[in-house]
Image 1 (cartoon, rainbow, N blue to C red):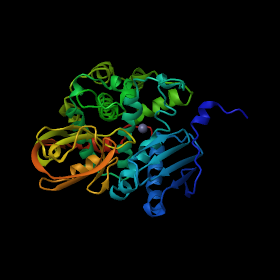
Image 2 (tube, protein in one colour):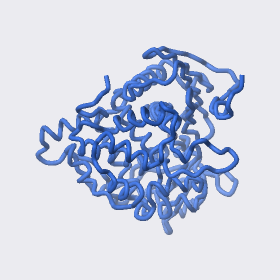
Image 3 (cartoon, protein in one colour):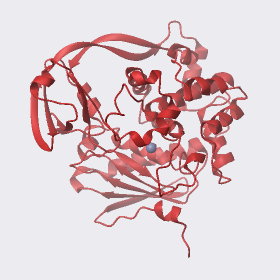
Image 4 (cartoon, helix red, strand yellow):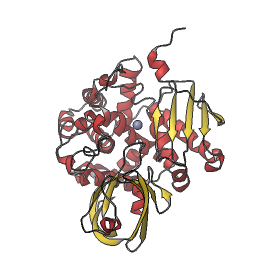
Amino acid sequence: MRVPLQCLVDSPVEIGAFEETDFDEGGAHYRIVVDADRGDYDLTKLVPVTKKIVAAETAWMNDRPFRTYLFLCHFPRDSGGGGGMEHAYSTAIEVNAQVLADNPLAFADVTAHEFFHLWNVKRIRPQSLGPVDYTKENYTSALWFSEGVTNTVEDYILLRAGLLDENQFLHRLAGQIEELEDRPAHLFQSAEESSLYAWLEKYQQYWTPQRSISYYNKGDLLGVMLDLAVRDASDDKASLREIFQWMNRNYAQPGKFFPDSEGVRQAAEAVSHADLKSFFTKYVAGTEEVVWNDIFKSVGLHLIRQPETVADLGFSATRTLGSQPVVMDVRAGSDAERAGLVEGDVILEINNRVASSDFQEKLGQLHPGDTIQLKIQSSGRQRTLQWKLGSREEIEFELKDVDNITPRQKARRAAWLKGESLGGTSP
Ligand SMILES: [Zn+2]
C-alpha cells in the first residue's frame, strides 16, 4: 500500500510506557494515551472533561468525520510545556504537570482548542497552507482564522460543555481586549500581517508589544466580532456556527481549500446575506480601532475601564507557544532592576511554581507588599532573585451589563453564549 507523505507526517508515532484508556461517544471511539508520571494526573478526572468536549464540538459542527480519534497526552514536570499539535485523527496535548495541578481549566483549554483543529485548519484549510511544501517556510495570512477563531470556538465550547460559566467567559473576553489594546502595535499591524509574520515569532525583537500583535489574540476577538456581526445582519438567524458548518460543507467535505480571508468573508456573507466587505477591510486586513461598545450593544454589554491598584512587578514578560516566558522589559529604577533582573532572562519559576502557560495568571495573583521570588536562567546560569512588590495603578477592562438591559438583549446574549443562532439548523 502506498501512503501519501502528508498522511505519514500527520500520524504521530510514540514509543514508551503509557497509561491508556478509551471511551465511546456519539458512535465514535476515542483513546486517551498518557505519557507522564502516574502521580501527576488522574485519568478519572481527564476522561469526563474530554468526553464533554468531544460531545459538544461534534454536536456544534453537526459532523464527525472519523470513526476513531486519539489523544496523546504529555504532562512534563521540567520544561515550560503548554500547547499541542493537531492532526486529522489525533492530537498531542501538553500541559505542564504543575499547571495541570494548579489550574483546573488548563487541560480543558488545550483539549477543546486542539480537537476543534480537526476541522479548522486540518479539514477547513486555507489555500495558502495547502498542500504544505516541506522544503521551506509556508506563508499564510489566515492564521487569525485558523488559530485565533479556534480560540473563539474553544471558549464557546467550554461554555456549552458547562466547563466555563458566563462570568468567567466575559472576564476572559475582557482580558483579550485588554491584551490587544495594551500592545501599541495594534494600531499598525493587522490580523493578516500578524499571520504572515508568524515565522518571526521566535525573535524577541519582533515579539515586543511595540512591534507586533498576536494573531491568536486578535483572531480570538475577530471570531467574536464576526459572530456578533453576522447575528446582527441576519436578525440572529446565523452565527459563527453556521459559518463553520458552511465552510465544512463547501470546502472541507468536497476536499477543497478555502481562499484565506476572502473565503471566510464569502462564508459569512452566504449565511447572513449581508455585505461584510467593510468588516473585513477595517478589522481583518486593516487596523481600525474597534468601538467595543458598538460591538457588544446587541447582547447588552459595555466595556468598562476602571483603575485598580495592583502589584508593581517592574518588568514585563511574554511567552510564545511551548516555550518558557522571557523578560521583555525591565523598568529603570524599579525593584526588579535592583534585584538584578535583565531583559532576555528566561523565567523558570515564580514563587517555586513552574513558569509555564499560566505564568501571567500567576503574576496577576500577586498583591502589593507580596514578596516575589523568580528562578531565572540568565546568560546561561540559573539564579534566584527576590524582592518585595510595590503598587501601581492599572486600567482594568471589564464587560458589564448596560443600564436598562432589554429582554431582547438578554435573549440575544443567551443565544450568543450557547454558540447558537435563533434560527439554526443544528439538532
Ligand atoms: Zn492551535
